[in-house]
Image (spheres, rainbow, N blue to C red):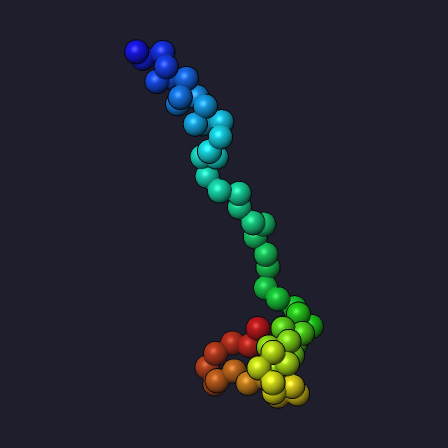
Length: 62
């Protein structure tokens, strides 16, 4: 009875990956990417041209 159980384990290992595919690690967004993303968000909510908020004092700007 152990032979069929082993076949099932082998088949399951082939069909189901052990871990999900990982996405490549990405560095910080560039200023242009941040601006484009902010503009797209503003357009999506109907407030085009809204200036980006400025970082609060004590926080580092990206």
